[in-house]
Image (tube, rainbow, N blue to C red; front, top):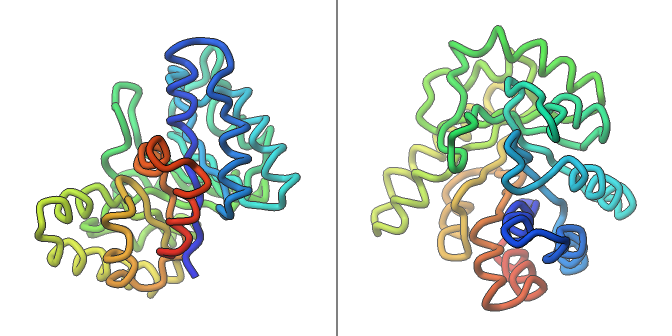
Length: 247
């Protein structure tokens, strides 16, 4: 079974746009877990545009109490600054079940590409080892078309997370067959070298079923933007349960 981790970043975006504490990130995460979600994902950024360091600590406590997975995403190379202690320090403080390393720069609106493993392997290797020493499972963001994604295994990663933005675009355009074939091939390549496969970015109720039917043995999907958008219409409980039915 593919498990669902709900990314609650967008709740924090709404909160931060107004100031104060509403909508409450912790309450939203609790609602998702009560509805049956298997875990919570956050992607804190150095500029604090959504999830903040105190959110990470609170969500770590919640997920530990509930016995579910906490997944922290982020760029391990982004230096600490005021209000952001750095991805590694956040992981030291919270010991999440999974850390997903993503090569996003400060100026990116959202994550839009995976690592170039041939280029980044030497820099990633000690960070992966450090996170695994904390007891974290490590996943690396990867493009389905990468000719070096197998190197994630040599770096020491446990999984890759396939960046599904290109698939979502192809699906929306009504021509997803080639994208699905590419993602299925990427999953098999990763699995052949012992990597687990996660997936995320722009997955939605419209395109998720076709993806999971075509791409073998996806262990986890991390969904935030679409799920929260859909929940504005249908409610968090109903939306999470709808995803669980699809999975």
